[in-house]
Image 1 (cartoon, one colour):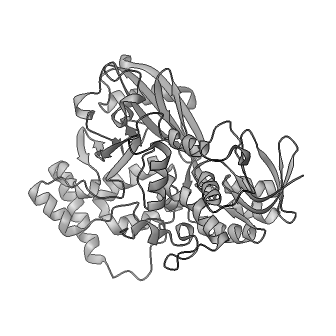
Image 2 (cartoon, helix red, strand yellow):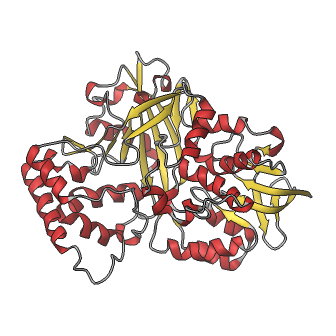
Length: 468
């Protein structure tokens, strides 16, 4: 049996953030276990035949100076391209700038009037409700009105989450959804003005080479070899005994453990019936990431765009990302090829035919005008993430309220995208900092203004505060 002071399960952004911070603070009795043969987790990338694909639409924008410094240390000042976000909604043959609700002037006259009427109606009702919304669906109806809700918000969000909005909570919103300002929308309509600057990722950076995964591979390489182990899968966790058992039979005793494995799988690994039952309240969706490589150069109408949202039924994907626009090194030769990544969500509530997925996605690209003809496609790559989005379901917070304290009582912190199960703090910067802040709490390095682990304990504050 091996003894270790700090055991970290998972070598994605959260685990790397924790390990890096421990080493910075002079701690060496550390072990990071990664079940695959490469670090990076869900923020990984693959390069196949000269095309680089990420496991989803990954861009680097940040709420933290500490994260920004780590990114620069990973790839250097010159290892990045900086982009202004240009994102759009494609519907009814029209290009509508994102956020949709700020740019309804791009719709037909009748749809624009319908959206504006609904927005004015709910604006007049603000302050008259006796209770907060019961779910995400009710929040959306109260916030946007019937027009925007029916034309865009409901169909698009169902495609993203793959669950009815009535099954989701709304406390996670924070800076994730643009809440409309009626006066601003009316001004945009009267002046036919595009309004695209909203959001924390209005500018972002992207690695020049190697995709998003290059960042995490680089940071992992900077860690001492002695504290890293790949192809190490945890099969059971003895909470009272403070031990974990690996698939190869090895047992490791820890003093403190950070687990970034999916929280429901961690509960299963403990064998604790109460934890397993509590984890049944956690919901997630599958995301199929489909990469398409095309002959030729990117079409003129896509040349400046970062990504496009699709609320309609003419395509199975909810978002298309112009990946060759992020970096010319994402394709073998930018003078001969260009590329897209498209995301398709699946759940028990939204069926996806996996056997025809590639054909359906390509057909959707043609139907929406992203491609002229399917013959343009020369490369198809598919990555299925069986856990793609940690769904903020109506039962999520109650489940977390049972699970997290029970684990912490045995010196186990469950953090990361699916360890914390909080979508609102599950970007790369958030999860990296969850690892950093776990270490700071243990070592007593707590910012008196932010308090301990602000990313998980004060998520709204973290997302909306203004950095100096």
